[in-house]
Amino acid sequence: MLDRLVNLIPASLSGEANQDSEPNLAVDPQHPTKIVATAFTADPLHGPNAPIYVSTDGGLTWSLRTVIPGDGPFGTGDITVGFATEGGVLYAGILSANAPSGKTRLQILRTANFVSMSTMQVLVDRLDVDQPWVVAGSIRAATGQTQDRVYVGSNDFSEPNGQTASVDLSMDAATAPAPANFRTRRVERGNTAGQDGPPVRLAIHPDGTVYAVHQRWTGGHGSTVSMDVVVTRDDGGGAGNDPFSALIDGTAGSIGQRVVTGRTIVFNASMGQERLGADSAIAVDPSDSDNVWIAWGDRPHGVSSSWTIHVRGSSDRGRTWSPDLRTVPKGKNPSLAVNSDGDLGFSCQQLAGRGSSQQWVTTFEITTDGWTTPVQRTVLHQALALRPVHTFLPYLGDYARLLAVDRDFHGVFCGSNHADRGNFPGGVSYQRNVDWNAQTLLHLDGVTPVPDSIDPFYFRWTQ
Image 1 (cartoon, helix red, strand yellow):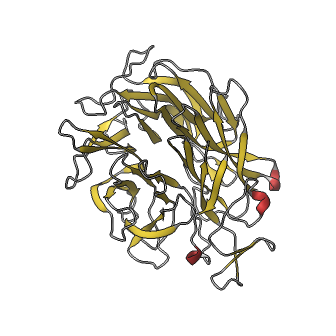
Image 2 (cartoon, rainbow, N blue to C red):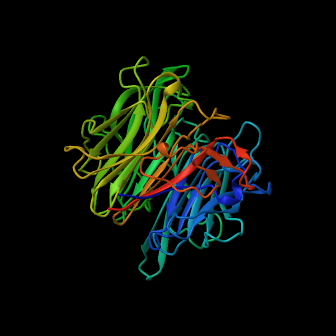
Image 3 (cartoon, one colour):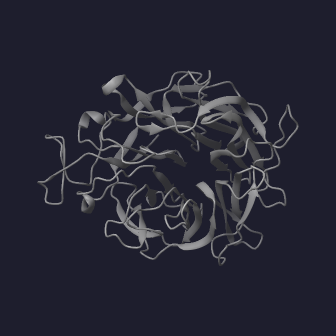
């Protein structure tokens, strides 16, 4: 059941009306009441650092910690976070706002105390990288000590041959001084039309299996791009000299299994005030690393067809893949996670309706058999797609996130904060001041109206 749905904006920020979009989430697996979330949120005090959202009570209440180095008044560019599975160390990958003109600047960060007010330590700092995606795990070394294995997928434009899909990885990142044993490895081994798509998503298993999915751009003209969806795998946690080379394409004989080929995207096309072009997700079964699922977006019948989210699965470590198990026309921001029962959770945002009445509808569903039998689709949030008017792109974000800890699912998404209880069929909790009867957000004085904007929301689903 839907256990909680919470607007993350603290009461102390009741007067804000920013576009706090593109959310991410980390849950401490040892202590699931400890949670960190992120979004395009600026420091309310206009200091030098950008904030993260933290909760110590399982997501019921949230506060800010301005610990991300960079331009606090603007906030970071892309930011994702991940806890190690033991020890409570939090890692982050960001695009710093402090970058030379026309450049992007990747930083990989670390803190041993996620509620600390101290600035997170910079471990890696380099230019020309897009959309970092953080996952982390822990292993017991032969010495008995815990080692954090951390992986940051990204689109790295420093690669001269156009094989831009990459992973920064460290086999022991918790305490070592910068760069904390991080090294950059390419997961793209094929020929591209100059680059890969922005998302490189990762899923790790306790047995050392690490999966990556990326989008190989193979051709196109202008903003219309042809791409393949490619899955790579490493069976030793990435510790070898040639990581992510374990999966061989059954047709081409090259590294990386192509799940689909020749799919069409129109990069930066618009749908419901949101830009399109790069949806992707991956998840592995924690009880069996042979079972892996992916999701992506494309235009399945060419430029004239609607943007569609697809979900497929593999039960043989990515060598062969099912046909589409689930499709969502006009979908956005698919997220996947598998709980300890082997149940697959799927969240997505879909543009529904027509004209001025169109809505962004955010849903969550669980399948125990790959949608062979019907599942319950739970609407978390629904709101007009044309209100509020966007101030920049992405509007909702280029991604959301779903995680599983034991049997429970934890997710985060962004959407309109319009104060209408009808927009939240399963209920919602706001920390910021609100008059539900008047459907109005209120300033710190509890009287002055505040315009609607985009806020991040956290939810937990308990089996």
